Image (cartoon, rainbow, N blue to C red; front, side, top):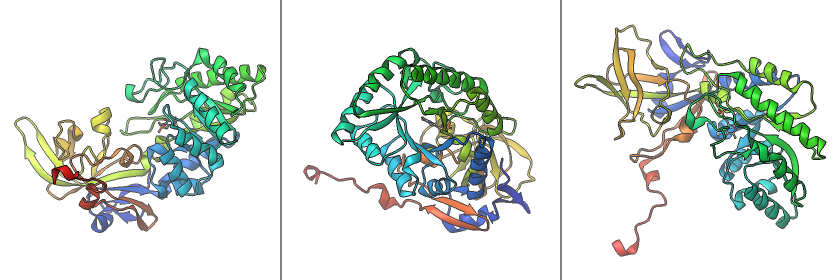
Length: 420
Ligand SMILES: *Cc1c(COP(=O)(O)O)cnc(C)c1O
């Protein structure tokens, strides 16, 4: 865990602010992000890759709060987006369109148009039909769409199946063996300007070999295309570097990842594009929740907290582990508990059979490593208002998204006349 999150005098702090103080102001549950942790992880990437100066496109879907996006923009980051909504967010946060890449298998005509008119760096094309749609839209606008084709390198990243995206059976990208053909078709389309090659093989990856294998294939393809007279400027190797959720998880450092990539590139002139999400923001955020009740089941002890799967779905969705701490550093005896939310689903848990120092009602718990795929995957399930997001900088904290009200829950809903 980064040292932006630590106990001082037995009290858990984010930078120099006690978590308790933030809770006094915004209540629980709440997400808290550390601006310094974010900056530190971005700079680790930048320094590791400094010899080749890549475009580091923060993957917006990991955490798309506009304060987070502004922070990355000010650090010089580009952005990897997957929807028109994310493009709107990045532009609202003053992100540089010239450093935006756009991925995703189902881009609509409106989204394609928005991207072309915003003059983004390039769009990652994921199918032949999408390529034609882009050609038509670009011609209608009297413009050219800059594109890279996302290929599927058929590589097993050995991560959770839901976050593996580069296997033959996956919906993402174009089959590697067909790529040359598709590029040739694209090269004669008037509305298309080919600028790069792209792949993204998955998320929470700990092994550098799949990244190396994928990059080898991308370089091979780019070299071949250049030989065929199709000029390739960019190689986009996607994101996916894993982070530590448990203390004995040791993911590769950005430095090791960079060294591998720089050595694979072997001095070739391609401009590298990276799309890291989780590894930039995952360990820069926590979710704070309050213990509502303790309950002794027939065979288990339950700690029932006020956050739930609608606030942080990763344990329910991917069976993922999150470290949890008592905000008041505890010296109580440990017991084995399930820490669960109050949504009516058995999958609604944050920890199962976890050894945890005894808690009491109203204790505050911090669920760690919740900065990526946390708030962005939250929902109103069970009609629970979405929780606030707070950003800490030094001794100050800022509410970067307010808690939803119960009135927000029914906004936009209507009862048709015939029922009245
Ligand atoms: C989700 C995604 C990323 C980011 O993945 P992380 O594991 O968060 O680094 C990058 N590129 C694409 C195309 C994605 O879909």
